[in-house]
Image (cartoon, rainbow, N blue to C red; front, top):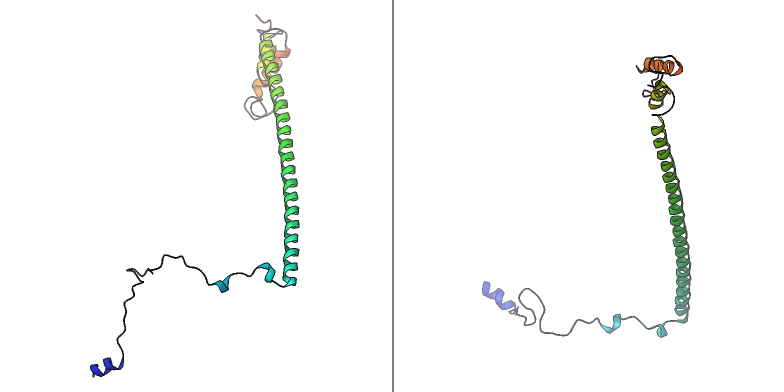
Length: 167
């Protein structure tokens, strides 16, 4: 039975010299080239309508590219101007702040040195203490410092208070 089966079909040769182990194709050193039928036709072979369409399309693309380049240049110029304006404003504010800080420092040093001279002892002490009555540092009501603030104010006004002579 098996003999009848084998005799009905011819032997199949499964060897191929162009296939190396692993399945890679061998035997040809030439690179693979696509058939000539798949290459694009030259523009000369195209109909007139297509050639005109391509020209119009290329002109539109070129026009859009020019518009895009000009918008980009305008945007870059505007951004550069904005950056320059920002730094100019920043530097002006910084210079004003530096001048203000120097002025305040000079006034502070002048006032600090001025507290040791002139007036009664209580007036000099009142210059060193915040007697504004604002906030917790100024002796506002309920801060526990209100009584001391009132005492310092009354001593500063009283020319006959103990220690008012400045000695």
